[in-house]
Image 1: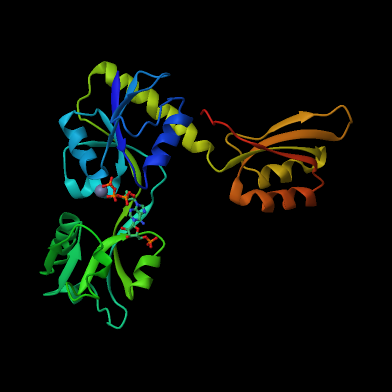
Image 2: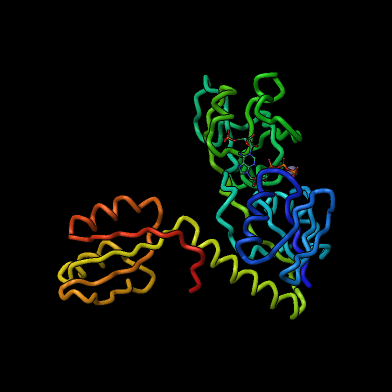
Length: 283
Ligand code: PRT
Ligand code: ZN
């Protein structure tokens, strides 16, 4: 049995449950319980606030956790980051009022900066040799300059929309973050084996996201050019058709490239193109 802590509610909750689901770990999402047991894998899910996940994992209250790398870096607890999970992408940046002129990190010397991430900011300023006044505040950091509580902010940015609507501009991206799988250092052999099994399944589930399976009929003479258009995992599957001079080709394509690839394939004679959803890629 292994226990994983995930965010109880918030931005990472749904995608954490979806990843577990895609990895064949059925979890009943009953928010009133704080601990649930999977029916299909020897795993328990502990629902916590994201801020508490690094500590819970470092103490071994949970063996594993899914949390933003920003929280791991800020809290500084002893946990191992074992896998990047490809969702919850954001960055933690310094932002200043739009009317100001930015001159580099020295701009912040002697300024008041509001943030919920004092540790990461302190490390950044130490590296840059800047002495500034860091004000730790819990919520709504982005309004601090407008209400006169700070000269600048250090906060999570994703689309940048929040900064724009508060008259701020991003001037330094200090930390890139995404959701990560963390583990208690020194898991028992039994738990380590379960962790490896989970990581293998997560990887297969993540690999297949945004991918499509493509089948088509192709004149034999176009195979070389089609292979250039479709660099597949090892190489595309090519099978002869009953009609001489023609073959059937299968491959895997990123969804965002799909239409460009289809147009290129049609131009070299591809016909009867089928696009299928891809369930899993097992390497
Ligand atoms: O209740 P709990 O403590 O568990 O949740 P929380 O409110 O502390 O965290 P939550 O759910 O807001 O975020 C969880 C994690 O999602 C964060 O720790 C990040 O790793 C990740 N993440 C990804 C984000 C964002 N994108 C994000 N855009 N977390 C917060 N934001 C906020 C940001 O603080 C700012 O107010 O969204 C605003 C900026 O967004 P843009 O798109 O306008 O730039
Ligand atoms: Zn939080």
